[in-house]
Image (cartoon, rainbow, N blue to C red; front, top):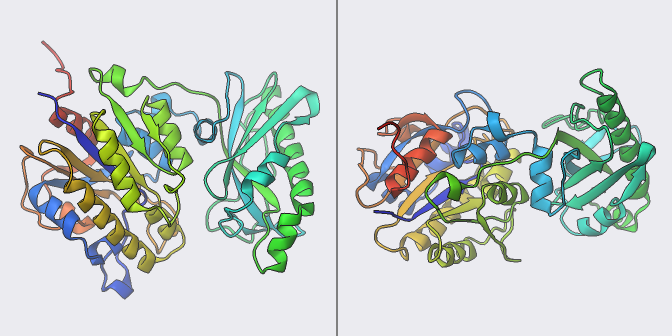
Amino acid sequence: MKRKAILVSIDGLGDRPIHELGELTPLEAAATPTLDRIASEGLTGLVDPYAPGIPCGTDVGHLCMLGYDPNEVYSGRGPIEALGAGLEIFPGDVAFRCNFATVDQEGKVSDRRAGRIRDGVAELARLLDNISLNEDIIANFAPATDHRAVLVLRGKGLSPQVSDSDPGGNNEGMAMQKVQPLDKTDAAIRTAQAVEQYLAIAREVLGKHPLNRQRIMSGQLPANAILTRGAGIVTYCTPLRERFKGLRCAAVSGEATVQAIAKMAGMQNYTHPGITGSYDFNGKLKAAAVLELLADNDLVLVHIKATDLAGHDGRWDQKKNIIEQIDTMVGQIKANIPPDTLIAITADHSTPCTVKEHSGDPVPAVIWGKGVRADKQVTYGETSCSHGGLGRITGNNYFHILIDLMGFSQKFGA
């Protein structure tokens, strides 16, 4: 018998003890009656999204969460971001994940996210789109979520084997990195030169734009440069409905990366202007969307990005508050689902507030529903879940356990 399930992805949920919270994590310190109730009646454990001790990105974390092996289907963040941003990408194209950023006159990065700029990015992106570079290369550019964007290079003889111009997290104050070929092929050299040419054009265009002048006058950081990273080429995933007996799937997310992963997995993407990938994620609206999609789908993924943002910003107080909002959202979902529906709650990675970056710490996980073997844990938190009946497993394992409980797994052997 088939059962439906809701998969709640709380981005960057895992954390480490915070002194100001009495050596508890933001999740452990938060008031979460619904999550605790689910844990007390469900099966808990810890999940290493990819593998123990290895930090992974939102893209890899969600591929694992949906049962894919990133070693087989992952070829860089760029193509995933391009798909999420609605850009066409063809074999031979090279795509890059980008940030609007703030740099000084010497090219040193003051802020990798330009103050998390949101307003006006579409206007800025239009000026950076469809630009002709040397050697018949065309650069296409599109905004993604908030300060994020996507660059796609199209032309003959390109390669994703080039380095990042982004100096990386927690490295404000460093200069933009020169894009270098990572091998000695003509294609890699040609691609690195094209990216460098594009970044120079972007700095010139953005530096003159009235929006950035207005931002400076109002005390905001200008978006006067583009940082590139995660070069990759197009890849293919076998849709979930082909892997698991016609499994019908949908996703609710305001974040372009997760929307792209969902599209790669053959899931229906739900969009609404009120659903964002930022702090104002509107849990009530997301819960309503989940319940609406559940009528015609077997599995509905709902993603919340705000916890990850708070981790990157080092805001343990804000992360705690967001978790409490998520608890309310899950309570709204739980109160209105059909009685035989499963609820699975986990994360794509940890983003500890003391680190301000993704870490290799495992994330807490739970599966709840009628017929699920409950363990003896009574709260949903990192320490409590470490004693749960799921044990410590990978994200891929977690998804297959959920699929089996739903009745969509296939027997291995005769």
